[in-house]
Structures are given as C-alpha cells and as structure tokens.
Length: 563
Image (cartoon, rainbow, N blue to C red; front, side, top):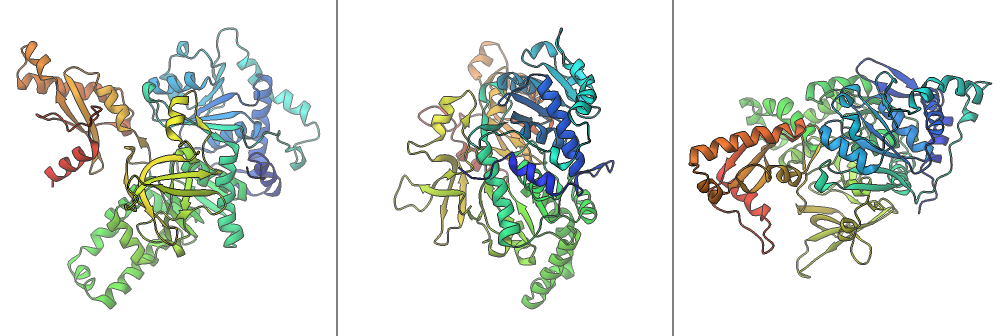
C-alpha cells in the first residue's frame, strides 16, 4: 500500500497551484484555474452532503470530454464517493444497465444522453444534473434534488463567510484500500464487468507519472492535450489525474481526433505529454507522411542509406514540431501499433514510446521512457509499482500468459465474484489474457492476445463477444463471430440451415434475413461498434471441445482469403 493518499495528492496540488490554469476547453476556449476548479469541487461537495451522499456511494458520469466533466470527476473522487464513468457512446440500454448495476445515486450527463433514457428505469437515481447547463434535469417524485441545487449558493456563503481561500481546501480522509472508481469494460448486460479500482491503484499510476518525469528526469509537466475519451482509464490517469497532481494544464480537444485537428491543436497547446492510441499515429502516418515518401523521387532517395537517414531525421523534426515541439514523451497505448508504422517513427527519432496496461490496472503495467524504449516491446514493469511474470504451459517455450501483481491491480469485478476468481491465480497474480515474453533486460514483448477486445477509431474499447451475443439472438443465426479487418468490424454467420429448410427458405431468402439482421444489430449498437458487413459462411466454424469458436483460426483464414 502506498503512503501517498489518492485524495490528499490533489488537496496539496490545488493549494500549491492556486493561480495556475487547470482546465481548458479547446472548443469554446473556456479556461479555469486551480482556484476555480477547487471552488467548483467545494460546491459539488455541498450538493453531495445535502443529498446525503456518503463515502463509498456511487455517482455516475457520462458525457463528452469537457472541463465540467473533469471537475465533476474530481469532485466525486475528492469527496470519497465512488465515481462511475460511462462512455458517452454506449447505447441507452447499456447506460441504464450500468446505472442500475452500480446502484448509482446521482447521475451527471450531457442533456442529449438523458433524453434517450427512460427515468422510470432508474430506481436508484435520486437526481440527474446537466453537465452543460448545471441544471437539474430530473428527480424522482417527492425527491429533494432540485431544492438542494437551488440552495447551494446559500450553503456556500454560510460555509465560507470570509471567502474561499487555499486554506479552505480540506478533503476528507479515505484509505487507499477503498474503492475509488468502477470502470465498466462493457455495457452489455450479460457480459458486464465493473472493474473496482482502488484509491491505491489511482495513486500508483499518479505517483509513477510524477516520479518518472519530475523526479527522475527533472522535467516539469506543464500541459497536455486530451484526445482520448476520459471515461477510459488510460486517458483518466495520464491526461487528467497525473496532470492535475502536477499543476499542469489540461486541454480537452472535444473533437474527433483527425490528423489535421490534432496537429493544429498541438501547435496551440504545446503539450509536454501526449497520449495516443495507435490508430491516431497510424492515421497521421497514412494521411500526412505516406503520400510524401511514396513520391517517386523521395522513394528513390530512401534507397540511398546516407540520404535515407537524413530524410528520416528531417521528417522526425518536422513531425515533432507539428506536435508543438515541446513533448517530453509521446505515449502510445491501448492496442498494438502497426509494426511498419512503429519502425518508421523510430527511424525518424520521434520521442515516442509504447506502453502496456489494462483497465484492471487503472491502467499502467509497463512503460519505458522513449530514450530507452526498445521497438516492438511495451516497456518494462513499473519499478517499485508492478511485477510481471510469464506463466508457461511448456517450460521450453519462452512465450506464455503475462501475469501481473502490484499497486495498480484492481480489487476485483463489482458484484461478480465468479469472474474475479477466474481472473486471479491461486497465488494472487492477475491474468492479463495476453501472451508474451520478457527479455534479459526486462523488456516485455506481446506476441498475441488471447483476449478479443479491439480498439475503435477514437480509442473506444470494442468487445466482439458483446456484439456476438446480440447477433446470436437474431433469426436463423446458428453460430457467429465478429472480427476486425482493416479497421472495420465484420460479422461471419453460419446460418441455421435446418431451421431455414423447415421454413421453406432458399439461399436468397436466407441472405435477405441476414441483411435484415445486420440492420437490426446495428440499431442496438453504439456508432463505434457498427458492423460494416455480414458474410454468410457455408461450413461450420472450427470449434474447441467446449463448442466455442477457435477465433484465431477463423481470423487467420479470413485474412488469408481477403489478401
């Protein structure tokens, strides 16, 4: 257990950085200082107290990245309640399920999100507040939420009659061993996993970030551009928590991170840390760099060793400058990066590194500063924070399951003891579900993923099993698999031919049913989960003895047949 308390870290930071800018919305230009952030938190705490919220009670948050989203998150965290961040692109059904499964008492959200929900389906919610207007959107009949909202100013004046100063920032005590957040890996009812993240896990990620840059490297964190959804632990930890604990300024991009938008924003923000998922860097390579290096005269020069190195370094300098020219590190995480793209960036000298983590570790497991980063690796286990081992079925095989333990590991899955037990070994190590090996220098290399999670275009976690569970319930679907091919989701379906025959349906009719199934399926999914095509297969999928599809074989067969 770490000595640094996850709440007190922010109490100290807010006091020390009172007059500095804290949160900034790139769209609209709204900016607030640490004083104003602390003031907003104080008002939230009055709301929570008067609503009877106790430490450990759940408060949900769902909306697009914004300063108000961040202020709400910090308010819940510093009160000692449990924050339940929900991805704003989850379907209304999934959002409703998460609110009920977590038993959240208050819900902060964008107004458009709440319009799609049925308040009658939210028995535990005692009040809903708009992130945009701060108006009370709803309360149950006989509730007091709107009355409490209207009385906050009067309560604030009574509590702070001499004004709000740094000395007024005194947050409650809550142990690092307690739950601080519940992060849902999927909104689907049958596959819901609410990861219980402790205060210690948050503190572990925060303190590693601070130690790595400020104490080890002697570099002060000053600014970041938040590109990824803050409901993800990756963005929460390194675009928000580490930054606010360091007195840095957090700018919310608030737009789809296309290469042009990201580069233009970086020039203005001048971030000292950038966090990307591979797709962002791959898009920049494909749209900004590849057209240049594929020009005939450039392609010819790249074949000349001395000239090639000069061209690479020139591209690297220009690219670094386009990112603001101030970044200590460009961190890529969340999924595997294309090896060719990674090798190209490495040759240019761009200061990037690839880290490794998972929601269950809030999220960081391994990392290496760009100067010591080994290409195709995911860094080394966080020294003093995390341990990594390889569990091998065959002692002669260097590759095995990556298993971890340490400060950042979750407490378990909320209300799901069975899944929790399956995820931990008998001696207490977390099974990552990833396959890899560790070299003699401690660098971790991932060779494959036994898990099936894939990454959406903007960094969203997509769980094929969740989509498959919906597709499998549609007419004439016997077995199905959803896979990602060239950044698109494709569904393969083995129809129930016996059922079709009994209904007198020929191949054309089966095809029409499947086309209707695809439309029905997509109507139940978030936009980033949309399946682009549905293909009928004539032979049964290869199965394990337990009658589960051998996913890796199907994926390879599909890729081979579409070359």
